[in-house]
Length: 165
Image 1 (cartoon, rainbow, N blue to C red):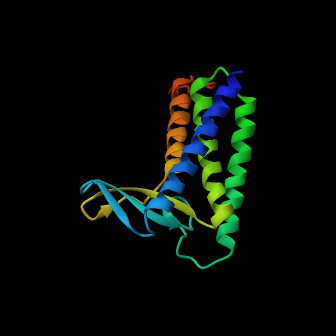
Image 2 (cartoon, helix red, strand yellow):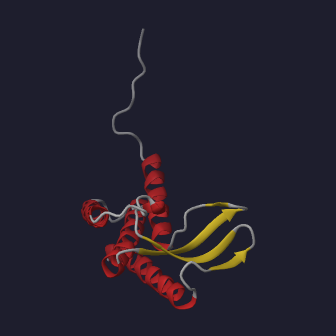
Image 3 (cartoon, one colour):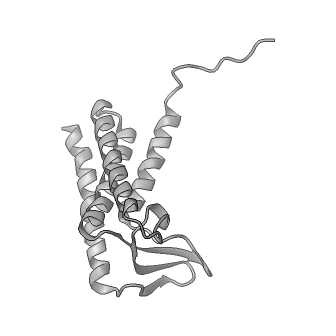
């Protein structure tokens, strides 16, 4: 039953990601921006054909999409196996893994359907913009943060011994 709770996290990320991307496509023209907090945050409508943060977006290669899709499928497989082999009672770990899983699936669905990912959250200070991102990207980053917290809270299995002179 606990695993169903974690699967609901994955499902929620996917649904919220799909819904927010649909809203952006329906209400904001491509490359248009809608200021929310002046000089800090706006909604935009951009298409990312590259990897995270637009890496490889400007390359005209048929190999890049195959690598991105293959990488996303590999992440999906690794996360599913790790989540199933880990204790369902490890809330931090399981939450992090399922956030990553939901985000990976959300972006993978875009890549399969459109050949690109819809990004719409734009954080910036004056003319310095962080690359636009979406709910799936946010879930992946939060999930990775939870995995780091989980690793930090667990004691090391092999303690480091200090060198004796």
